[in-house]
Length: 73
Image (cartoon, rainbow, N blue to C red; front, top):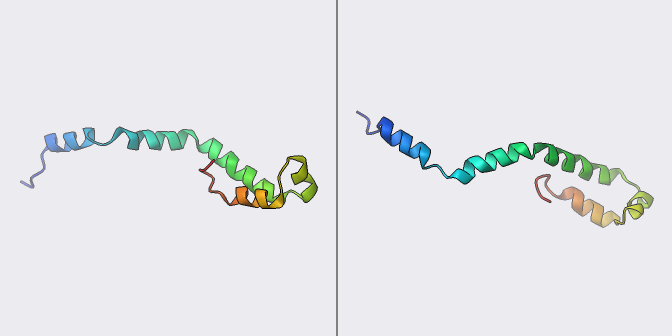
């Protein structure tokens, strides 16, 4: 006998924090938004000065936004 029982394993599974599974579901659900954000930030780097001025951003602001990880707002 190794000290583990089926009951102990079931209790361990039920004791897992619910936010861990919720966080994984949240990440999977928001994947399209993450991908869109990544693409948008890359597109900012391709804009010229006039295009950036049209949307009200400076080159420094666009570069700062593009350096953010895709999962951060």
